[in-house]
Length: 531
Ligand SMILES: Nc1ncnc2c1ncn2[C@@H]1O[C@H](COP(=O)(O)OP(=O)(O)OP(=O)(O)O)[C@@H](O)[C@H]1O
Ligand SMILES: [Mg+2]
Image (cartoon, rainbow, N blue to C red; front, side, top):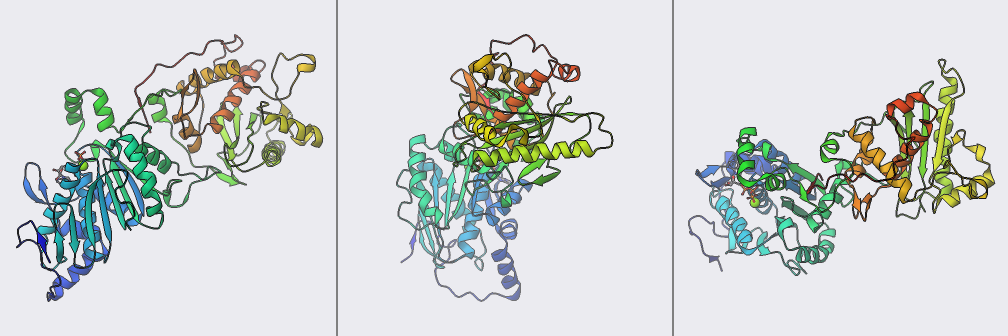
């Protein structure tokens, strides 16, 4: 029995056998195999001021449709009023029209929004030619059931929305604006359902950097495996593909428009709604403008998951630092390799499941390679200058014990240790405590902001973007890691030690480091963060 609250002429009765002519048959097929073709040629939308218009996709909308089509799970962060809901609505209509027996669930932040998305789908459906339309069995405010067995339902997001249903496509609009506790409960209840193979599309402008949307967003932007290498297809560690579109991807918006809009709604609102910055309570160590300018470089070559950006060169000083970890899958061990006096990142390694012996093996492999290359270089004048160190707190004790057994000379480099230690208190390696960390952090900030470090690594840059004030010091924001930054802080300390006798290094790091800096210079707090 057809339940209908709309103009009966516009919806098609179920199970009608229409005879398609050759043209229509060819068109139907083209639409079935390509959502872009379907939307561009057959979808009409209701424009705010112009009324009924054909939906001619903006370039970014074409990319977005392709991304929805090619990926099982997509999270799209888009500026306000960019056309994200319209794009998702047309994609869902395509999905339901040309696939049999699919269940689509739309969950929006409130009832009005959920109903509005259904209205858009209905408007576009009603405008389709009869020979493309699927017949309709149910057609009401919250539900459309087609005669091909496909169904589109809309609901407000609550902890129990969609529970127990089998879902082929879940669409969450404005997820960042669902109340945090509800979003969290909803997501943990629905995730197992999606894990069985359903598609998921999430669209939103950002809100708090701690909510469920932010967590899914950050995880989908972590596109590196445990060694720091790219995961296939650019997917994040949670299997989601991240998609981003800002205000300037709308063809009618330019700097002039942005200026007016910024003046109208205020700087902070513009930053969040159009520049896509999360609201955050955290301040990053490095200022956001510098962070935005850090660009990663592809490694030149890789050996045993070590990323190298250049081959060792003659007559430079090399620094190798190890921040050890337990190797049980939690924090990663990290190694940084830098070249002085220019302060260039040369290589990097990280892994969260290598034990201390394996971590030391990497140090031996790296230092041996640098030593071999430098010695065999015709321009090398004297003994290669390679220095190494490790953090001797906690897991560092295991490093000391292993090397006491194996012999410290298995590492063909000079070990740098904490200066000013005396007698029986002497302990190899560098120690991190509140004072030494704050000094290194302050120096790192000034070196990065002064553009005096040549950082190459993508994972290191992303750790720096998430390195924030925490309890009076700095650390990764919750859910993120800072192992590469910790190893970099040791490189900073090593270069400060070397600057005591090497004038070139001293001038590169503009050395006033002989004077100990006791106070941490706190960066100015900022209200927004770059994701
Ligand atoms: N390609 C397009 N051509 C013409 N009009 C478009 C296009 N895409 C979207 N629109 C229109 O722009 C307006 C905003 O679109 P939509 O509601 O999908 O944006 P949104 O990003 O979801 O906005 P909001 O942030 O308010 O949720 C709507 O009136 C829509 O019909
Ligand atoms: Mg919208």
